Length: 174
Image (tube, rainbow, N blue to C red; front, side, top):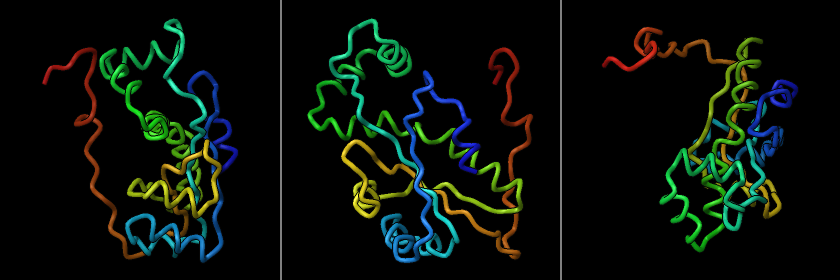
């Protein structure tokens, strides 16, 4: 699973994600509390802590910086200006780093499922609590948890929309 994450693509090949492999029962229980008291998380044999390095900041970047240009196009210049004026830099950097571990974590999810395991993305997470529990340095944040284990036999499969319902060709025709 970790090899699949390692080989996943990342913006500019930055690879600014990190993954904690949590097997300790006490740590899993603490993380379950930090995830809104979802105690079933602690029952998973392994919980992957999906983290991101937030060392970088849009504030003070030169106008020709590729990351700044991309974020202005994606979110608007006004929004980036607002974020750059926001005093809590850690909050801004956490917001912008939010998608960082998602592609590699999805690769891990697919490997788990292909081996008959089950996994679930947990985004309901008190990030500061999780950071303290995992003793992360200031430049790292835990953004998601990925509990991995064996599926319960009595769990009904969730209904998914058809490919036709989630796809459009060329342009949106509504």
